[in-house]
Amino acid sequence: MNIIQVQKLETLGMIAGGIAHDFNNMLTVILGYAELAEERPGAPSEELGEICKAVHAAAHLAQQLLEFGKRTGLEPAALDLGAMLADIEPMLRLSVGAKIITQITAVPGLWKVWAPVAQMEQIVVNLALNARDAMPDGGNLTIEAHNDTRGGRDWVCLTVSDTGTGMDEETAKKIFEPFFTTKPQGTGLGLAMAQATVKQSGGLIEVRTSKTTGTAMDVIMPRFVNGIEAGKKADASLRSQNTKGQGTVLLVEDQEHVRRLVAYMLGKLGYDVIEARCGTDALAAAAQVKIDLMLSDVVMPGMNLTELIELIHETHPDAKIALMSGSNDSPVENLPMIRKPFRLHELAEFVATALGAGQRD
Image (cartoon, rainbow, N blue to C red; front, side, top):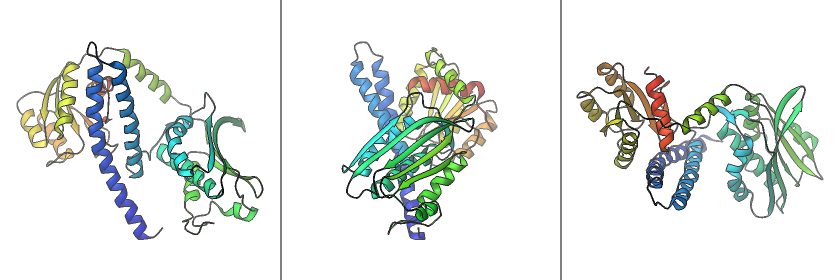
């Protein structure tokens, strides 16, 4: 890949990330008011529920834009490969085309793995496209995930197989070498990067190929087991609790429609809310009253977030700081952040946690 192509990708990534950020702001408003409307007596709950589902689907598209922009999804996380396949299935089917008969399955009770979501999605897409290219006249593409036990350890195996033109032994030995490619327009980096990602997660990729039966690529990942799952279950149990907020929240958000919604949601939860459009407004408002929490958007006009936090600390040293954003980017480490769009119960849990244990430094 030459420098011009890299620059083009970086530019596209910046554009995609910016679009996704603004898109998530709009989705926050749609989801928030739809959820609030659901609570009204006589509200068409079924129709509003469908709106909420559509917003979540749109939010997933925005997330994919952010991942394309390399602004999120690069950190490893507990990943359900079956759920990941379900998420990207429509895109996979469109990518391989109608001539290819595609079957995608995952066994029930599939174990989780520890891997970066965006990169794992990209690996599956790349393997599927390689399979498509091996079947120019059509064929069968099978993508399946199952649990496996070998060598006294538990693994999750994701297999991408095709009925196309297989590889000879010499080619199969070289496919993971950087810059080696059998395609006229190929970069030779796709499989090399895939192998690096899987290896970093403690796994490996095995190749089974034949000139007569096609190729199967086995992505084998170690089973993920630790205390994070228990923590998630504990978080989920909080949703059934009726959290009543106490304290004053300084809300900093430059988008008026988002600010009005979040202020209303915070008020509904029991908090006193002071609204500010930018850092200058926030400092002026904070000078008049004691605040318990500043909830600020990451991107705002004028004063940058880091400077605002420092000045708030000078006048309100005991105030907690929390962030919200349309992307996963945060210019300040160790601060809690909620990603837009979010629902009322998610905001309730987030703010309660930030007030109880949020870090300021």
